[in-house]
Image 1: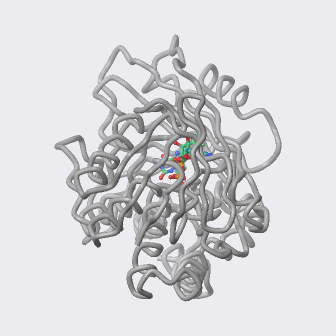
Image 2: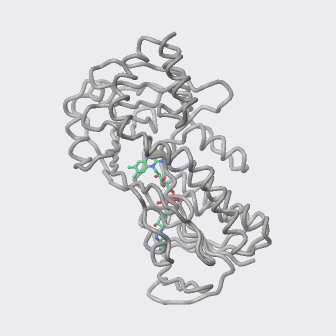
Image 3: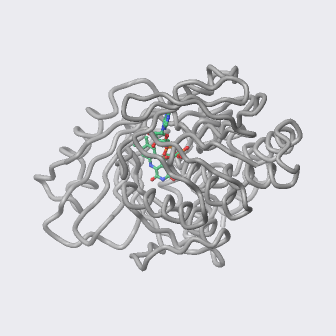
Length: 372
Ligand SMILES: Cc1cc2nc3c(=O)[nH]c(=O)nc-3n(C[C@H](O)[C@H](O)[C@H](O)COP(=O)(O)OP(=O)(O)OC[C@H]3O[C@@H](n4cnc5c(N)ncnc54)[C@H](O)[C@@H]3O)c2cc1C
């Protein structure tokens, strides 16, 4: 089976890795000069760490974060640990993390071509351009792991995304050691989005924000860093954001498969609409894609049915979260204040990712935890 994978982010690299391990002949095409940076908070949540363990990709030793600090706009905040049984989260600058995944794919037998842009897909043929030269090749299946642009997916006839979130991040070198924790700040301008401080070194933080509503996320982040005690405390009063980069997080695509093409990762629109986490989802969709092809002997039509079914079930939480996002705008701040006084509620909201686990049971559990 010959498979083309377009884009070497976490979705593409993990798809290439999993398929090459299954014995497929995989070509992984990446248009950037490798390795490349990516606008991201660099947060590898417990879900990402667990998934890497599950597929056998080892992370080098690095700081692990057992807890998260969450604050609301008026200073009320709480710290809580992940629930028992899940691995601690970590951070990994994407330029190095994505390179690690691609190395794993190549070690498994995938062929990797950077500075190679996929320009056209027609039926079973893929046309790529590298060093100004075009070539066309035939493939049995094609994974679109092109990220949030979704350009090729749109041309393949897949429906557009339902929503886009804007996010921006940069790096701050600090004069003092950073606390060993993720920090999530529900500052007024961002809610139901948030600002984050994720340490990527003892004195180096990834600092960013995600905005669910329209607005200038970069300006809002700058204003927050200049004025908020939550930012000025850990980062210092003269914090300078270096290497700033913005990006979009695309949410919701009603169909992810057409003919021989499969949208995976951000191209599938499966990032979390409240936390903007997308790395674990990207890798998980890649695992679904590889499994669907393997289980159906490489038949793209049957694999497409299996893939759509798996992704749709996985994405059910996100669809529910999107419906609740309006409500979350009003819930985030009072819930943070209440959790500051009720450790059981604090543990519960961290356990469920600090966003509604999207069904009546979650509401009931939250309500019960809030009362105790
Ligand atoms: C500011 C910001 C902060 C975020 N923070 C976090 C976080 O802390 N934790 C988390 O889990 N998620 C986070 N996310 C989401 C996360 O970055 C994405 O969900 C994740 O990168 C998706 O991976 P992917 O492989 O689908 O796409 P990408 O990582 O975007 O990779 C797509 C690749 O495809 C290549 N490509 C595109 N078109 C072509 C083409 N035609 N030919 C060849 N190559 C092509 C691109 O160059 C790129 O390398 C954040 C997003 C943003 C914008």
